[in-house]
Structures are given as C-alpha cells and as structure tokens.
Amino acid sequence: MQKAVAHLPLHYGSAPRWLFERMVALGREIVRVMTLEFGPEEVLRRLSDPFWFQALGCLLGFDWHSSGLTTTVCGALKEGLKGLEGDTGLLVAGGKGKRSLRTPEEIAAYGDRFGLDVDPLIEASRLVAKVDNCALQDGYQLYHHTFFFTLGGTWCVIQQGMNPYTRYARRYHWLSEGLDDFCCEPHKAICCDSRGRALNLVASESEGSRRAIAEIGREEPERVLAELKPLRELSLPDRHGITAEDLQPEKLHKVLLKTYERQPQDFREVLSTRGVGPKALRALSLIAELIYGEAPSFRDPARFSFAHGGKDGRPYPVDRELYDRSIEVLKDCLWAARVGRSEKLKAMERLEAFYRRV
Image (cartoon, rainbow, N blue to C red; front, side, top):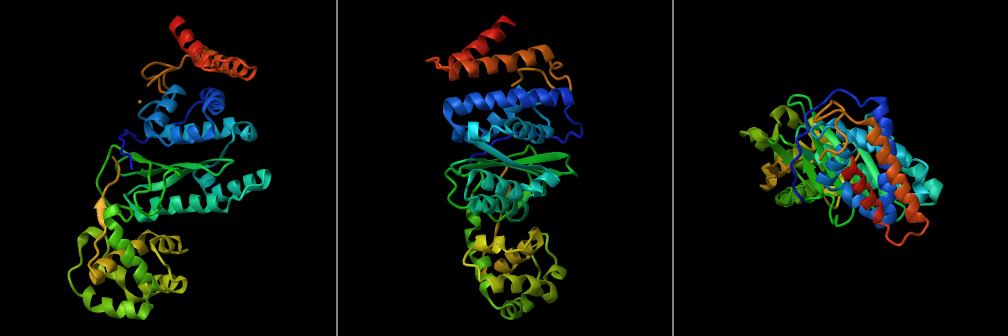
C-alpha cells in the first residue's frame, strides 16, 4: 500500500454556489479530455492517487488543506458526469452523509440502465465501507463514500472519516486494480496528518489474528464461552479498548451465534456478517489473543498546487473570469480533438499557453 501524507483539518463552511457550478463545469471538461485521451480506467487510477486528487481539488479552486475538498470535488464530478456516462464510460454513485447510504441502490440503477452485472460492485462498495469502519478502527467515523466505476467493472472508492476531537479528517483511497485481498493491506492510500494507535485487522501482521477470528466464528458459542471464562478473570490487555464487561456471555453469545450460523471460512466472511460491527470485532480480536495467542496489529496505516485561487481567498481569491475562460478552453480543446486533429495533446498545450499570456 502506498503511504501519503495530506493535512486535512475540518472546515465547516461550504463552497459558494457560483464556485461549485464552475467546479462542476471545469471538472466535467477535464474528465472528458482525460477519458478521450487515456480512457476511463486511467481516470480511476488518478483519482486513487491522493496527491493527484488533492491537486485536482486545488485546480478546481478549493483550499489545499480543507477536509471539504474531498466531499465537494467528488460531488462536483458526480454532478458534472451526470448524463455523460455512455460518452465517458465513467459512472459515479454515493456521496456525503445520507447519499452514501444510497450507493448500492444507485449502482443497481446503473446496472438496469446499462445492462451491467453490478452484484460484485455492490458487494465491493459495502465491503470497503465495512473494512474502514470496523476492521480498521482508527477513531475516524465514515461520513462520505463515493464509488466511481467503469462500464467494464473497474472501480475506485474515495471515502472519508471524521474525528471531531482532533478536528481532522482521514481520507481512504481504494482501487480495484491490483487489489488481491480486501482484508490484507487493501488500500491504495490513507491520508491524514494526525496519526496514533489503531486496531488494524487488515494489516499484514494481523494475519494470525484474522485466521483465529474466523476459526472462533465457526466454533459453537458455548464452547468458546467455556474456554473464555477462566481467561476473563485475568488481567486483560488495555490496548483493545475492551473491558471485562464487554465480554459478558449474553453479549458475546449473540455475536458468536451469528458467525456460527454462517460458518465463515475466512475473516472476510466474518466481516461481512450482518450485525458484526466494530465492538464485536474488537471483542473477537481480544478472544483470538487470549485463547490462541494471536495478537492483532495496532499500527496506524496512515502515512498539493493552486491554479485558480481558493474559496477562502487563500492564497488569493478565485478569479471568476479566468476560471470561466479555462472551462471554455478545455471545451474548445475537446471539440478540436473530436473532429480529428492528429495531435490531441495540443489541447493541453493551448491551455498552458493561455496561462502564460495571463
């Protein structure tokens, strides 16, 4: 997994309407040029790169250090590409808050519209969210989930969590290309300036813990509870954030019954079990350590360019005339490329020449 650092303090303001409308227009033309030149899969590769994504947000006029960049840029791209899915080959679902909960339903609607098998995509969306909310417990509660995908089934996820105590956000980048295992070092990158301790069940060094948790999930609940009873009276490791009260038989029995009924063959199936959330996984990881001696990892996995100014006037106010002219230049470039000019890259050369003149 690539490691990248981005400083993302929480900003509670919003982009003004006049700026967001321009972000939609400019973002649309940038993506149209890129899909024409490089294909939709390359756009997803770029979006999964945290530095490229951050630079795109700055290009669109957002502050480089604002957590709002993530939600606004994703929203602008979703709005800008609406109706152009067949033209660009890119489809966007999800968003911030309640819109993130509608991601499966939006993916399914695209499936009906374009005749796609979207079941693997819906499963991927749900599993990505479950990993970052439950299997990786770093203190950031997810509030944004945007799912980009192509007509060929390649996908990219950008989601973000919030820590209200530190006032920092953490952004998680996923890419289907090269993803071998959702439960072992699956992220393309995780961006956050603030790092600490995390229960990291998707770290490579948590492999033993994942195996033990899956084995516990297949055992009869009564047998696990019988083995755990004498161990609960010992001193428990404080690093789990689990107390003896959390290991009460009546609480654990419900969790163990759910996993036992499913008979999970691996950690992914445990994670996918409905009703198994962050607290249940913390308990299961502690049981795996107490009974099997398999301790999980507590390694925190978390490890930029102005063109049009920033919404808060830093480093300077957005130049609306320049912004609108940039959109028109990109439109002209796209039109020129489509009517058959041999050197499509002249589009970007013209844009560069325009900036030199300005």
